[in-house]
Image 1: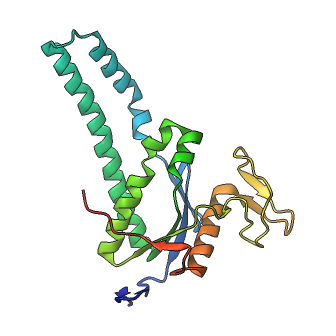
Image 2 (image 1 turned 120 degrees about the vertical axis):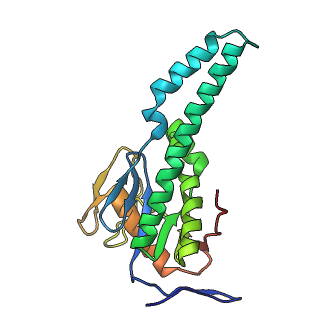
Image 3 (image 1 turned 30 degrees about the vertical axis):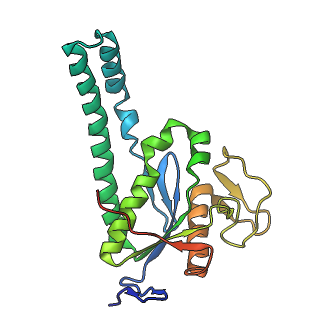
Length: 217
């Protein structure tokens, strides 16, 4: 069995299970993996949208400054708090599951502003940044490692079989055939494979940053 050894000048990664994986975030699948399995997005806010809207309507009907309005405000706050707790609990369980399976986990650096322009409120519901903070903390506690590749690397447009890079790839295209080698690529799984390959080949170099352990909530 191996352990992760930290030195003053560098981090030396020695794996315990020999397993590494790349991960790509998405809408329908919270994570697509280089290992051939996906993790569906729970979308807790969307699941509770009717209750949230009802609580909002109740609040808007109450007279400002009244006790009834204060009760309605607290009810709405509890609804949001419940969603947050469910999401966070799911994040912790997923972080432990992934760090039990893999010793080194590779991700693409997030461009949250770009994601919000494309996906709107769903980005907040998915909570990618919160999940990564939890994952980094769990990984640090277990002696596992989380690395990030440059967000500008064309992970979706690069064929993971031969390295051919498409000029364009519309967001609506979920599968594409490589014009160079003929392999058929699932957009998200292909991206995850590329993230793993690039992360593994550049681990510890300038375009891959070591995750800073998050503070436990």
